[in-house]
Length: 339
Length: 266
Image (cartoon, rainbow over all chains, first blue to last red):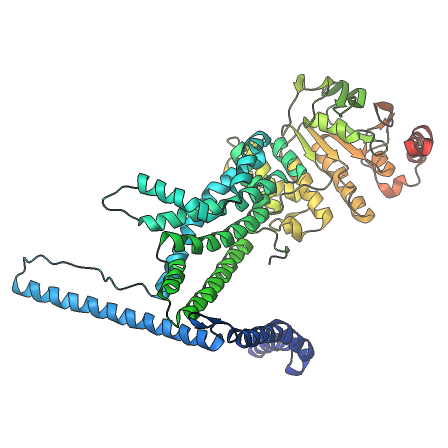
């Protein structure tokens, strides 16, 4: 009996083992082709780009010295990181000192009033990145909350679409730089509070992002909703679905692919717009960083701006990947090729 | 069992075009008894689907109307369930959820949650889809999708089941299989069915009556053929049956001699 069980187990283990391909069965040729395609080719391209950049940059002289090459930009990246670490240690030290001081005060007189001040050091490059991401997310989320319902309504109702379409098409191409002064004036007139939750500059940039990035989502959602398979609409009619059920069970799921294509374009535009808005609005963020460095005009400024350029690009790329992941998770069509 | 369960009365329909309105159907008159299986056959473009869509309430007849159990029908509703040609399942829902959507809609407040679950499973069982209940449409074959479509329609407990070329997109073997399933279901439930088909064998095998339509424009009923073969029918036995072959020949003659395709006749 026991031996039989053992035999059975042995068989199972063996069959599992044999299902794993043996070392020499792995298709090495195929694997190496994959590796070259996915890793080698991009690396070579990046290498060529760096070489060309390095070669041409030194040829161009500006009032701030030669245009920085890859090496100098990398050095500044390290400097910016060091500055960040330094600032953080200063901050920690500041709070430690404050705590000690307050503790001492309390020791002498338990009723003493203690003041807790927050640290007021200047934001580092990495703080600026975080601020920018928060601002763009705020603007983008507000834009999506407006754009998706508007798009759905436009897609469902031709009359409303005809009414809104000229407005959408007119506002769509407007540059953020044109919106910003108007937004600034309106925000400073409307947002009056003794204890503001958000700073005005933050609102200015976030609202400008909203105004510029909602259009692609509206247009794509409209197209997605209005091109639902007619048979599915007939199914809904035969079932006499309530319009809310119709929207949530049929309209939204079937327009998800188009909607997300729009959302990704919107997010990309929002990120581009934000940098420009921050520059003008002087909202802390990457845009302000670039502007400050430009005004600073040190011999390192160009290299530091270049670091910001790469940071902006990489963050934008990263945010788009996040959107892509989100799109994959909500998309019902798992076979669709999403890029 | 009233003789006038479903009545299509003097139905004509015109579609607006930039010039003159296009008259697709002219004076369609047809009475259908409870439990009767009626096939509509005719060349493509003759307006078979339009008839079905008018009965479903998806189109409005320009003249005349459709009366179901003494009431005129003007809008779509679950009492006239439709099985669409290309299954029309919601691709983001599983087979179970697709049927559930219909059941929730029709039996909300009439059945308890447990009863609804049983009813959904019962209908999927009826079309032999128990094994793939929780798969999405993209994960099952064309025949299986059509089965789920039929289950969804049956689950609404419709007074009339409308089928628009339900097996048209399937291969011959699957189609035969589905026809056998449909015979079995019809035997058990005694539904009133209107089915559109292109397939002469299918029409003779399944129907009590075959309605043959003339070519459009202004198509109408050319001839109605009673199929008085014993039920249940078996395709293999019928292959040598004289009556069966005679009926088949009559439909073929109508389609290919009297109502040749317009472009061929010209």
